[in-house]
Length: 208
Image (cartoon, rainbow, N blue to C red; front, side, top):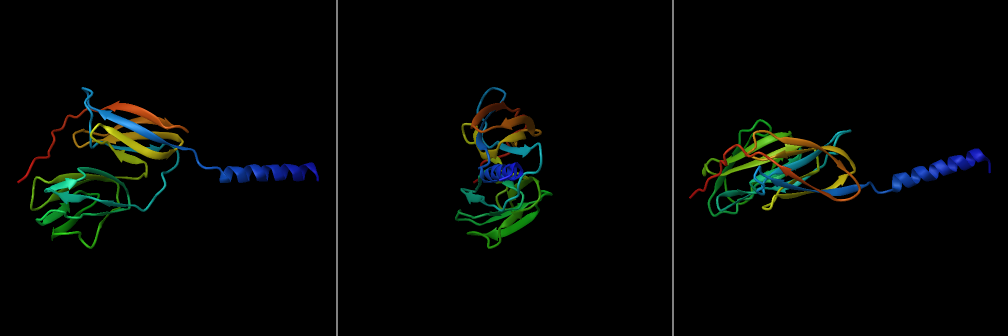
């Protein structure tokens, strides 16, 4: 066998192994706290790649109404996500949004509306109820599948992020603007801590 044929065979074998090799990815754990170090729940964390575009995907979500409250208070979804709004209260609700990225109106209903809402444009969507005006929630629509919302202890885990360089953005209803910092994802899980400034009032209030 000639040297040229051997070289071609080696290159083909190397290429095949690269194509079959699993992509390197890892989890990113982010702990969000305020300026005093107090844990911040309901902070939306998402990653945008510095090179190329994030892959698109078809997803489904749900925002419930329980005890005359939207659950969850903050949701983050990828553009194109279909969201249902099940009403688990014994009273009817009228869910709406006037936000530019998604204007919709689910008139007075019980149970689950037959038509879910497709959040197809990126941006912030505020939700309300025409019957119970204290009800408030937010949907942050992003163009990436790598995101999470912080829990009671301020911890959010963004799972299975491909290795690379990203802008990490953090948003909360009480922040005046998003916080952004660059981060590198490698082959191993990593954890970071961030502090945010909460300068806006909490607009939620209890209803009857």
